[in-house]
Length: 220
Length: 68
Image 1 (spheres, each protein chain N blue to C red):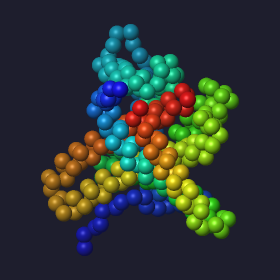
Image 2 (image 1 turned 120 degrees about the vertical axis):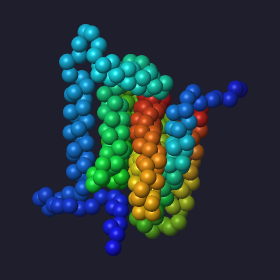
Image 3 (image 1 turned 45 degrees about the horizontal axis):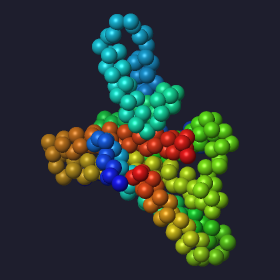
Image 4 (image 1 turned 135 degrees about the horizontal axis):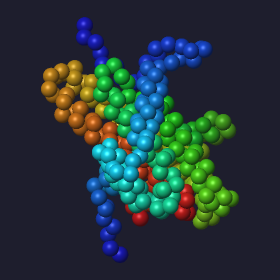
């Protein structure tokens, strides 16, 4: 009997009574990888540009220019590490699903909910830090009647962020799994290319929507 | 008033993906909160209807805000 393609998290062990899933392990590996990559990229900057430094600086400048479409220059400069970490983490997580036997962490809804809730909480914290008590007045603008709607909006944002990322990535894996079962040779390759592109787009969308939420929290 | 056009292809991608799940997310949150409050206060279906409408409102407001 053929082995069915595996979709979603699977419990592989237990530590102190807490079940450990395979996506949890891959999440930790990706986190360490992103950390190492960041150290490698930022280590020993030289006066004369090396190829690595040139590429990294160009990419960072491009990303900064894109983010400044949403936020002011000084805000982008200040909170850039947050955005680039979010982007690189999600991108590598999405792409890691192509390694055989390595489940993509973003195909687990717990990971995407964690990311989305963390992002929204961070935005609340930054908005409060930047604007002080003034920020809470935006919840009752234009009038106190809008309080439930404004609150509901804050709850809605992480839900839609998490659902979007999870739905797209796990959908891609399901499609790839089915196509691989039906036609295991050559046919999955274009689908994989498409999935790679979509993985990039999803990381991009998550980051730019976070920037857009950042902007609304800071400007209102 | 001139039509606002997306600046680049990324903005189009952003918008298309934000639209669908934005509406769905707000609707789902509305339904869940309404259902939970109805169960809590035993007032079915008052809160469910109210929060569903609120959810739709929030979803559309988000879209309009994005479009501006």
